[in-house]
Image: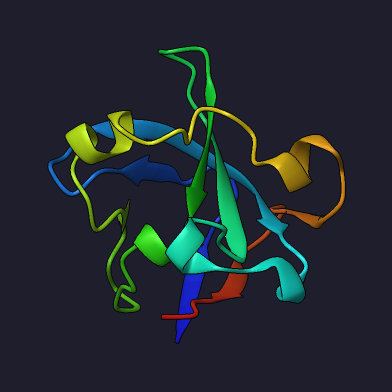
Length: 113
């Protein structure tokens, strides 16, 4: 499955709360991926100007949308987001052990579900 993400695109929760805007994708080394341990392969960095924190959303929680759909949304509500540690950079991002891809243009990201 592919997920199309635009630079600066608004990111919304399933219950219509705006989280911020898409900035970049962060890729964890494949051998370190373990969704059962909440170690996801790809994270979308979302800049949140209202709260002041950037969020790192595993792309597994983003909806796969149709070509005409203008909205990039999560599959979970804001309450779910608030109970996660997504306002902290994942360890591999903080230590610069992964790969970062800036969203300068439309990017297709592989969703591993």
